[in-house]
Amino acid sequence: MMVVIAYSCESLIVQPGDDDHHMEDFEATWQRINDVYPFLEFKNLNWDSIHQVYEPRFEAARGDEFYLVFDDFLAELKDGHLWYQTNGGGRIYPYYPARHFRDRHGYDPFVVRSYFDSGLTVTASKVAEYGILPGNIGYVFISGFQENYLIEEFPGILEYLRNTAGLIMDIRQKRGGSYDNVEAVVTRFISDSLARPRLYLLGEFIDIPPFQPAGPFTYTNPVVVLVNGSTFSAGELTAEIMKQIPQVTVVGDTTGGGGVVSSGGRPEHVGEYELPSGRMIYIGTGYFERYDGEMFEWNGVVPDIRIPQTGEDTGKGVDRQLEFAIDWIKRESN
Image (cartoon, rainbow, N blue to C red; front, side, top):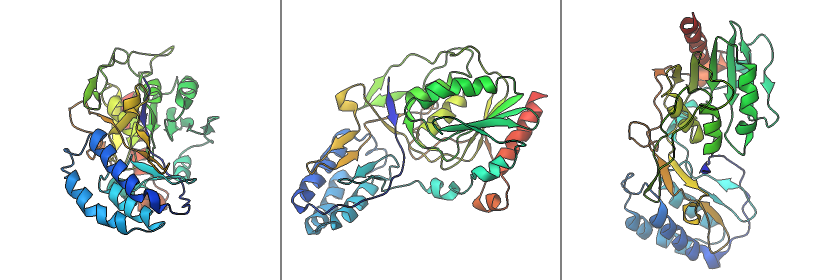
């Protein structure tokens, strides 16, 4: 089942305004959110009142002023997955979680590489890079879960790291992607079946069989998963699932808190929606729950061990979260 957990950022190219469709786009967007968005009650949003507030603003907007009002309107949902796309332009995300801004400079690839005696190997897709730290500790950085990249490349990564004393999986600064790629990663660390986080689409529970062990071998040595406030969407789902595996410890800081999803399985579950003007928006139609029954949305995933890491730390060439992970694996593997 392909579940899309999308989160990215592209540049904005604003085309000439189309006043004829401003009100139509506003009404269509309001109605679409009212019909399919799963978190209006959870976020205590009075959607009718928001309509009343924004209707005169849209009526007064001229030309590209529409985008300023539209951005404010969509930002009311405080949803890091929601995007809109201008005619001929890129996807615009009106909202980013506060934890992302807190931690966005807490990971620096150049600082990470300073802990290695040799360079890291970058996969063909450039989605992941991996290597072996001093002490025979494996390391893999995953930058996203898009396309089929991890389905195709993660087996080779794990084969290379197979005989390491332990493994650090770094999913700080992560973006979205597909559930299939998440599954391709987490199933390489389980020895028995594992229940999935509960998935709901348009309020309906989707019963999916448990995860099953995959691949020619299961990696059973100690694993540390690194997360921070910029870990979002598919990265959060990966961290939550990995938390359930006995040899895994999640270290870092609470993730961003993005829980909305959509699916290509049935037309009504698709998140992308075309407005009367031809502009595209993405409104999630469902959500995953954490294993404790709480929402990912706004709550995020709390690490097993909290180790803060700031931009000031990385500015000094120090990665406290990585250092803790290295020491943890040394202790656990002895």
